Length: 218
Image (cartoon, rainbow, N blue to C red; front, side):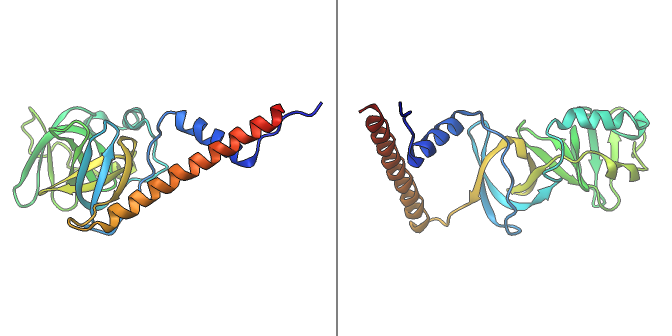
């Protein structure tokens, strides 16, 4: 008795269906040109447009950042490293002051909580920057920060929106692309052509799968 065999087209369709049913995973970030206009689709369904300001951290950085950061911090003197969630006041050399809940470190920047919980404000640590814990009299609670460079670094994309640069964690980005120029239909036409091509290919593959099953049942 001969067992029914699936055609290669039918097998491909099944693989596509199985992959589409799996949960979404963290998006692999793409490095654009500096200051290029990009659009990010966030995990909560929103879109964020801004200008690309580089990648922070590495793809090999831990996904569970909070746990890894606190594990690293436990090996340090607590007074020398801020805890996640504590409110800090950062004063730059030019006197600009930024205040927010500490969300971590990424390369040579500090991440502070922003009004949008999906984003963190990027605060550079280069130069003479004073970081003060709320409630402390000292203008700089962390005068020695050389060991901070060994802290886990949150893998994220820096994107400038207006006059503020934010860090968007890789695990919060589902897709990314270059923002098309307004008034140009070329990009939209190309995208539509790709969609139509995929649909036609799926229909053809589905027909091939149906044919394979019907022949096997005869």
